[in-house]
Length: 481
Ligand code: NAD
Image (cartoon, rainbow, N blue to C red):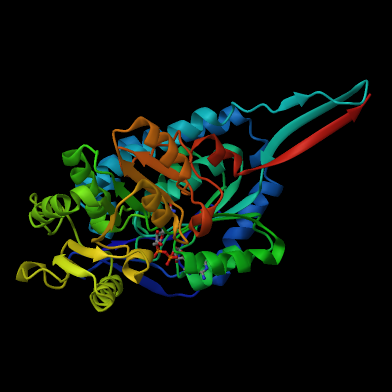
């Protein structure tokens, strides 16, 4: 069993609570690691260390080029330990090793990107309307940042926060999901090896209701960055109001994938599957809501059915596996409940809808890839985020109808559509009210482009230049000669 500690003020420590918690292997439910179960006091100690490093120990005054160099070093260490990181991620989440390796490549790239950006924004001199005066606009680090991440992409989501915050000159207290702490612990070890000074990087493990809430409500935290569900996001907004701290929220999604009749049929089928069954559908941008134009509806559904029936569900240790388990027993129950709701609402179950029969998979949190057709847009199964391997199909008969139905949701994270009509591409990509719109593709993201949601899918943006700006305050300096 892996045993690890948490990292507060440059020391690896147990929790002041004296308690520990175990993470379980989603493939069979057995314990794989034991870590401290932090509490509010631990969170307060970490915040105090981050505060001191920011206010008194000179971290924000470190030359930006030096901050960039440290991030480059961290990127190199991630590359060096990529295989170990991928294995830890797979152990914790149950996703295939291949998927975890892709994540680690992305993560090293994220650190390199922000390493390069760290010293590129020198501010600007603006034209003052008052003669013989100077006006400058500069960006300064926000301060102490609480960073709360989810379990589906544990290290990827943590890196989207960690790299830009450190590039900007902030100090951080990270809180990974209690279900998947291992890779965030490992990257903290790498940050220590890279040479971050005491208090700049802190890691507190433990439940969101204690550690997470302390970070969100503390008067000594200047910014809270959160990725997770909408319900928790709303709690964060309330807690953060205590000192009007800055808030960055990446919340859930129920993402439409619209297939027009003139689409490249085979490619659209491929991506409709990848868009939702990748990582067992536990992706905030999963294309779980498929919308297919009348003229090709029956053929498309038939092609989907044939392909879904061939998806191999299993443990990552088996080379044939294409889709692993969901994250926990609790989450498996939630997916099952949604399948029941869909049936009651009148959706037609075409494939899956149950746990696998394979006795080898007993004890693990496996669920078969599931296809519901005959769905209509106001069903709960269409409107709510299942976050599992469940796809719903709706029928539409015009472009106007497709856009109207796709937009009729409280979410606004991402959407995709498939067509060969260039005029339609321009019209529909502007008409969809989502933070990312993919045309003839799905689920593509990269560090250079911003990521975030319209409507209840969040506020603020991660990645890209804007992801760095989120960690800065803007100051106007006006000088009268
Ligand atoms: P969650 O909201 O249950 O938990 C996320 C994190 O918040 C965890 O670390 C948890 O411990 C913590 N937390 C829980 N209660 C808290 C509280 N009261 N105060 C502070 N922190 C608290 O979400 P999850 O189940 O871990 O993740 C799945 C959700 O994340 C899905 O809705 C998914 O769409 C979303 N997500 C969004 C993105 C994005 O980029 N928009 C990316 C990944 C996941």
